[in-house]
Image (cartoon, rainbow, N blue to C red; front, side, top):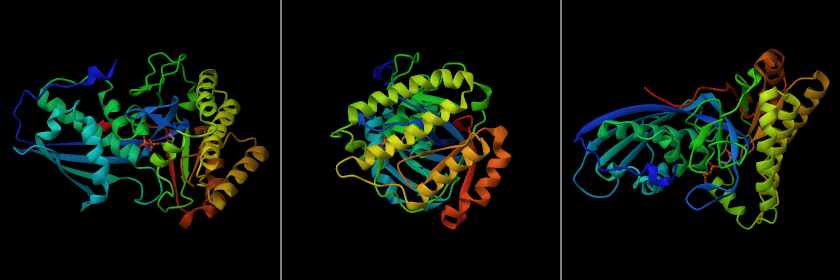
Length: 355
Ligand code: DP6
């Protein structure tokens, strides 16, 4: 499919007022997207687990209007929140050719996150995915036909790259890779090959090391890659790591999985540290947790590993079958490194849905 396949005609039905509600989960990348070009196109392919409990629930109320231009308000947990407006304005501008009705209605966007606000957990992925799902739901009503498959993911990408991996459940690939059939830079697809049972219900405990705002936005981070001394090698490494994942996922090779997932997390942070300017997004407790996880793995032969996003929080990944001993370790040891001992126990989930 190409961009053209997602263009849309003006609505045929004249609906004055309506309302839709959808939710979308967060996702955690195993091979990271870091560096983009053009209109939200990734410089390398990535793969992620869609999560279950960490999600955004969005309700959009729409009313027909006569005036031209965009007209919308955003409410977070019931309160009007203007700080989200610029990001949504940009998203609407990019999405307009694909959703021409955006100019014909006034929208109220009511959004809630299942995770604590300001917890440092990225909400842009689940937030943009939930909004894209709502807009597709509206388009369905207005055209009284189903928009093309993957359009929600395509739109979510225009809002935030990683959001396109929050529509489908399980493992999702975004970005063209020659060894992964139907993979594309335009939207996320369900990982198309055999996946061992162990990876179908993987656990992810998110340790909230630093609940503050991120010190570098992902936009600034992606921009760093434009001039980065190691950029080309990093994009190559991500492609190689994704290819190595194919037999690992099929065979249930946990050692191979741990090796790649930690290599990706540390490479992402290495890119930030060696950029110009350089950023250190880990906190002392991030490093302490990494050491504890590696020590616990060695002492207990446990299949536990960590990954990081562009911030200080740590995602602890482990198989469902080992959850009892690992969750005791997290509660007794790792929680001590979290702000207010806060962490969220999550697992692989089934993806976005409308209610
Ligand atoms: C480190 O998707 O937040 O989480 O496209 O600018 O919205 P934008 O960036 P964003 O970048 C996320 C990067 C990451 C790695 C990943 O999720 O793959």
